[in-house]
Figure: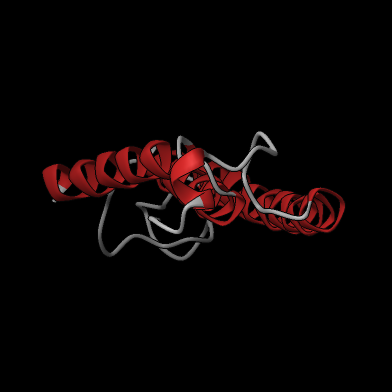
Length: 115
């Protein structure tokens, strides 16, 4: 279980870094979103992966740690706000520059139509 969980987090990080290094803004936004999902999963796993434990104190002798759950909930809200802000920046950059490249310059191969 832990190996599968760690593999999923590693795959999300690898895909997120790959997409952040792209030259267009939409893949960068997707990469940031994937990285935030990976961080959320990592924070959630810091409370130890366990089965059949109560989330609230008093219902069982064994209980799940509520702190990582609270951190993940906060990170989801912050990640949503960050994604909305980056999307607005990407739209504004597209409107101002006329293209959606991260550095604002269209490479020569795109100008000739060989994308």
